[in-house]
Amino acid sequence: MLDGDRGWSDVIDKSLRWQSPVSHLPLRYALADIDVAGTTIHAGDPILASFGPSGRDEACHGPDAGVFDVTRANKSSLAFGHGAHYCLGAPLARMEAEIALPALFARFPQLALAVPAEDLRPLASFITNGHESLPVRLL
Figure 1 (cartoon, rainbow, N blue to C red):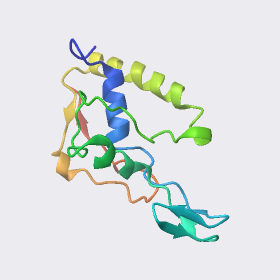
Figure 2 (cartoon, helix red, strand yellow):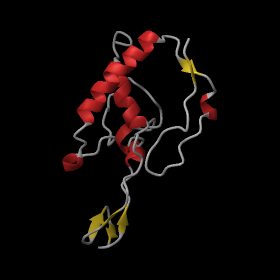
Figure 3 (tube, rainbow, N blue to C red):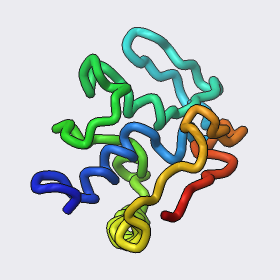
């Protein structure tokens, strides 16, 4: 437990919602005409599924959807996909994070960024989120 109420699983869930590791799914193409909220996607049109922005959807997560908050009640995200396309490895990924994070912070309780957060450079990728490097101090 991180504190009396929130544990590492809360941090993991909120991290996945707030900054999904996969931002966009590679292009797919509509096989038939599809009506989505009054807009027609025609057969053959490209479709780009955006997982990342869904975690910050104010209609789903409220007006403060862009704020990282481990106490947020809504834990939903598309970080591991949805329905028939839900990632089979999701339980293993969660278990790995729930083991690794407490071990990392137990070993390095003063772990901190070695640079200001605004100096971190995002990966030049349309598909994944992350940083080119993550310099830390292991105090």
